[in-house]
Length: 287
Image (tube, one colour):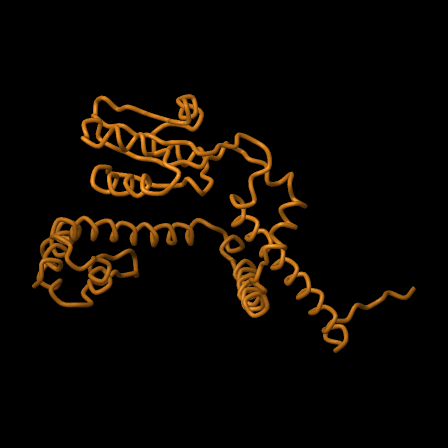
């Protein structure tokens, strides 16, 4: 008997009594029962991850048994308390079936026909024509960030070189940060949401920006002997987001519009074809 089976047997002993323990070493033995429904050891055993300790196995098994029992008890209670009309779910099941089949066919139709190629010109045209919907909700920044211990021998040099524009100074910064900084990233050429950057400092974005001085944002955590700093290469507080920042969202919007157009055409084609083939007929009342 393996440890997982032993653990399951222990749980079942607590739930069902010691007289069934010997039967639990074999698959397909009953572990729990709710009315005429039975939970078998093989099902329970499959639910326990391989390598689980006896303690974890017992806890997981008990959780599964209780969940299984709750589901069947809800069903039994609903069956006994609801009226015949309330228990009749044929219409809902049929509606769900139709909805599911329609959705699956729409996805196949879209996958077979969707043009996913989006040119730079199309991106720019969308950007120009949807300026009002591309307004910034928060400031965005281009920064270089480092998390470093305050007593690091490379502290001063790393903080200074955060503002490096390139060349050897930037290479030196990469090397120093690699050996001295638990966390370092360079977003100096990519716009970043202020709220995302603020999470690196463990605060909100408005508090973070209140620390901006001479293009540096520096938080000293004296209790941990740690400093988190960012050098701000650029910041935009409001207005229309730069195209490079919203490129991905624009692409998603264009694809969504194409999908909607495909589905609109699908619906129109279905109606037209059905009418032409006399599958769909609208009868006119003649007084």
